[in-house]
Length: 179
Ligand code: S3P
Image (cartoon, rainbow, N blue to C red; front, side, top):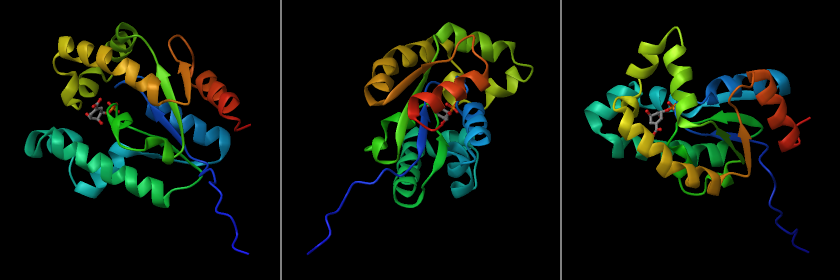
């Protein structure tokens, strides 16, 4: 008799959320806490395209960048297992994101995010490298527009403001059943 095909969890955790909310730092802390590897979608795009995100936006346009995000999403879905994946702020919109793994939305208010970025010792660089943070009114509108969409696609939401990265990673571990 033919064995039944079972949907098997890939063991990946996909961190989504707005620019500057701390997806990369959280992914690295989760990697440390769980012993899994962490990868970052923007890093994967930059190495695939041999170009920085900022440069891809200015030379090829945002639609091309989104195409690269979808390409990375396909690769992650097919090839990557038991990994913590941090994403760019617009990655939530790739088709079938939940097929990659458990989707965790990191939430903070727009003003909190802005405050954290502006108080960072490397604030100028952090803002400069993000094309969609150049106009703060537009960024606020983008946040408002995306908020319900992040929540719609997420399996789990974790509030991050005022919490240490250790605490955030611990909460994710508990909620996602990693520990
Ligand atoms: C983007 C967020 C950026 C990067 C690109 C687009 C977005 O990543 O992917 O500039 O659409 O919100 P971070 O969320 O790491 O800043």
